[in-house]
Amino acid sequence: MNQSNELFQRARKVIPGGVNSPVRAYGSVGMTPRFIEKADGPYIYDADGRKYIDYIGSWGPMILGHNHAEVLEAVVRKAEKGLSFGAATEIEVEMAEFICEHIPSVEMVRMVNSGTEAVMSAIRAARGYTGRDKIVKFSGCYHGHSDALLVKAGSGVMTAGIPDSAGVPVGCTQDTLTAVYNDLESVKALFEQNPKQIAAVIVEPVAANMGVVLPKEGFLQGLRELCDKHDAVLIFDEVITGFRLAFGGAQELFDVKADLVTYGKIIGGGMPVGAYGGKREIMEMVAPVGSVYQAGTLSGNPVAMAAGITQLRKLKEEPDIYTQMDENAGHLFEEMSKLLEKYEKPWRFNHIASLGCMYFTSADVTNYEEAKAADTKEFAMYFRFMLDHGIHLAPSQFEAMFVSYAHTEETTQETLRVFEEYLKQA
Ligand code: KE4
Image (cartoon, rainbow, N blue to C red; front, side, top):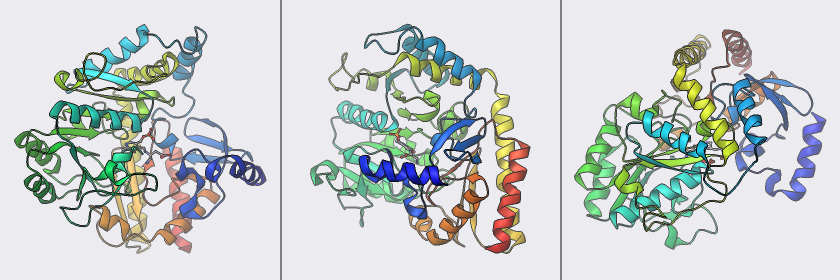
């Protein structure tokens, strides 16, 4: 592993922590990060030529697998016509029409360049639309790194948001209230204590940034009803779940319509893309037609659109992709759970569709407090063992395993073989 070592030494001299996004530094598992040279299908190859079965998939975008021929071809063809114009293009219209046609809650959509930007913009649109300042998020949910969303979990329901990062003025978080995931009472209390002041509730409909935590029966519908009752905007942050849990994402799977939805990852096919969209009356608040300002040099970039729309069209035209992917993922996750029982490990395994997470805790995980009880040192040993044996997992207990359409019964069997080897020595 000398190439990754050398590259990491070089990187740390010129990039903070040697990475362009913190989780890639393997900080919580105490290892030198693998530098990846190439990828194909379910596999990635590091700078030392080692091959891994990949369960990060660029944190979600690579749902068809890496280096998908049709996506790559679309990118090359579009790039040959020019990389970026800073002007309107037909493919942006095609992307917007596609999303509006296939996502019932979306009447208008704006493309941006990341999930962070999508969420930041959706929050601003909701505030502009309602004329209210406060927002509600949930402990353990991550919505990108915009100031208002980098808040510590408020200790009490009245606690105004306390910045969870240096450099974020308290003024940016004081209007961010924090509720408990899967606890509708905590949301009701916030509405009662902040009457007519809450612009929006934003939620990951399946939380995938505290590991994977599923919404309890009625939770999402309950949020819908509370937002209706209090004239607040319900925002589903589907940056991870969008076009993954089903083609229509969590809105389809749980049959709950959000007022605004944010996307990223899959809609870019691996290129930098985010989007926010929803009710026309809210989206028409956005410049240049409305008074909510938002802009971006590379928003709707034609090459990125080509990657994204090619991937989305394939997902739409071949619904068996979800059937096969979810069956394969379900088989993997169920067999891993059975191995935990076989080796009498009390650990918990949460999973849904092609998302899963094993928690090193013996209690159910239904919210952030319960997720935080997991033994992160045990996780680090698990991660290291799996990586050393060719399985590339997210380097944190509080991330998800992403299974793609390119994963097969063969990759499942190999993963289970390595997992059993780990359990034998754990
Ligand atoms: P980006 O700005 O990273 O494109 O998206 C932010 C974001 C927004 N909403 C949700 C639900 C998200 O999961 C994310 C980003 N996800 C992380 C993975 N947990 C990205 C990985 C990273 O930060 O490097």
